[in-house]
Length: 404
Ligand code: FAD
Image (cartoon, rainbow, N blue to C red; front, top):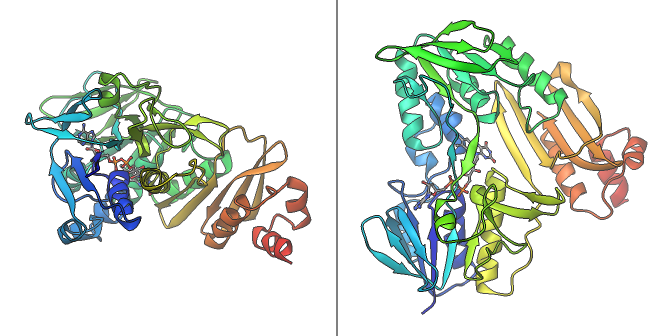
């Protein structure tokens, strides 16, 4: 009987095994993961779970019965190495598992801050449920909280920490890597209005303390008092297994359009995979639930049938300080932006174009725009600047005019 072994029981690993059964795969399905318990989702960790308004059961992707009912074997262990010649993996406890297809769904780990004092007690990060539990407990006792990094995770933490914090960002705007300047400015204002201090263009050069962290030193010499410091400066893909097994790695495990590595028996999906993205016209890595789920489905289809190249539209969401930001498309190389709606009223969308073709739409509190954008992106031809201008950049009106 054919056996699929999935390494990494996070968002994409879970989806891969679930989709295999949905598609009627009747061989053995094994999901090996190094975190305890059933697979869980990460988005609430920096939102409702952190704020204490969602419990453990709301994190779980499925309960234990689901795995039993679908004959999916959960193996709670770290996979140490892959023997591609023998088509088997070795677990940390020395056990070996065979495979016919191997799916690497190993995710990413948080980047560390390479400065003195970064290992002091009171300096924490956020990736796992254990991290979130530690942060929740620390928040109850902490006086001054400093968040290093103004990306999605740092800002979500600030928004759900339940108290004013100081956000330190080395770039000259928040969300620098992932959003347009219009969105950055809006969220900076929102967080300041919520009582947070936002410091831009300031690197962290050292963390000072004794038995725990006491101060954060900035590049201009300022020292901020801190007894809890959250480091949120991005992630690095978890590629050690692939590297050791001699598979090509370049900012992630390198895969082809069907998400296969250089070894046709081995796939990589989710945060750990570097794939040729149609929407970016380049090989990239994406860190989102959409990408994790859709890549898992794509690989399950490839294992159970002919499979298609992965071409799903990237989309993303974040909830912060009462605002829901939804992004459709990929911003890379945008050369023109248009703001539709009213930022002052907290409801607007930013349309980004490259060579006069729409490439991304960021919507703040305008879910209907986001849905319209997703439908427009997957329609042919792609929406052009002139066409959208003729609809006064109203995405829903433009969609209707196309349908007419
Ligand atoms: P993961 O979910 O990280 O799973 C990888 C798993 O593999 C982990 O459990 C890891 O421990 C395990 N593993 C690694 N190596 C091994 C090994 N050798 N052996 C066994 N197991 C191993 N995305 C959104 O779209 N919207 C959001 O609002 C959002 N919020 C987020 C909030 C937080 C706090 C975080 C951390 C992420 C958030 N994301 C969000 C991103 C999203 O959760 C990730 O993109 C998604 O989890 C990626 O899924 P994955 O399966 O690739 O990796």
